[in-house]
Image (cartoon, rainbow, N blue to C red; front, top):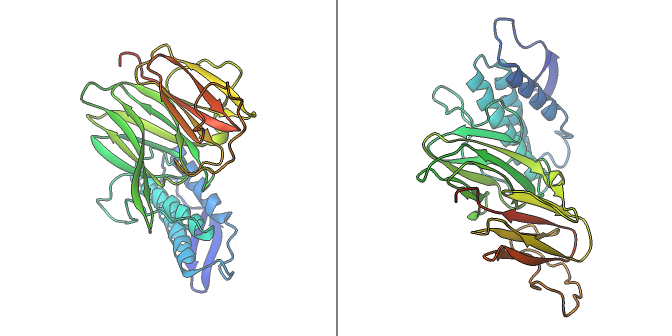
Length: 320
């Protein structure tokens, strides 16, 4: 059984029916993604006659319903994945409109018909994007916690001196377009996590000469808790839950290594107005605590942690 969502003469309706014949079989992972998307749309707490059902909201709702109908009727995997991509983009915009957040502009507007590029997601799994391309690809961010910062978990196969793998943040909404931070810039094989600010709406992924890559968006709650002593390698985001403390950081490979403190109330790179704690005069570290970032040229430094936060570390892969 799968959900069928459609547009009735008197409005929007939801029915259930068996959708496919035995002759139309998509990969099991894609079938599961289509069913999950139908359940996601069906679970929307939206009264189409209520005060928050503005024309713009209903437009996105209809787009999500139509996308599900296309996905459930698809006879080819690329068609199902394209419809899923369009449907999730509509759901992202719908949620933003209902909750008064900036509405992202999809870099690839919904469209049907032959010649439509195959979407990035290999199976339609939510929050996961994969690719193998030469050039740059813009990805609309689907957040597990809309409106909140998140984690970017990225992997890329090894390249050479001419095949850099890059991830940059972009804010592209109805009112604003700007390029944000470079999260990853790596020549070699990459595995790591980076902090994703709340104001970013898209990721610009650059990979050349067929490098394979994958990205998963995870909630900040998935970050590893910072223990009294932590050992690791590569880029990582650590969650700190305590009060004022001093963090000592040491890298075995110190070239281009950095550590950054991110205040728990930070929503962009500079928007933090929490009160500074009264540090004793002999406390090591800088008092510019909202965003502290060090180039650890000597391989060792200290960082003040004034309150619960996230610490983002970055270090080069072997061979850089």
